[in-house]
Length: 141
Image (cartoon, rainbow, N blue to C red; front, side, top):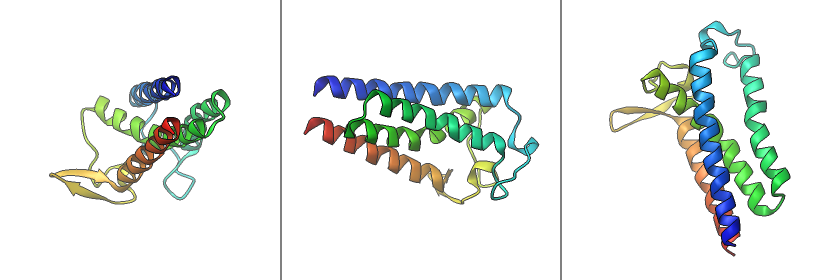
């Protein structure tokens, strides 16, 4: 049981590192969304489809490494977290925080303590916490 919890913790840490590094790469070396042709739903480009594939690769690797229920739940948690972590990392390297006019706020959002919070940040955070908590509960039982 302890080994499962430690292994899960390491996977979560690797997910955070991956998202942070990808945000750094995206901020410094990939053109901003304004320069991309937004073909899908008038908001996503081919780049975003490729990014979805990359962000699906790490959870799939977790499933190959640990095909148990704990692995499945951690994979879903990672899949929910990676776009969120990458987006927050991008804004960190940009020295800003998203506002209602930014690309990432296309689904709307809320002001929380005078700071804009895109709706999908909240949804992804809740999904991440749900899947990680459920994985922890399954690992403990």
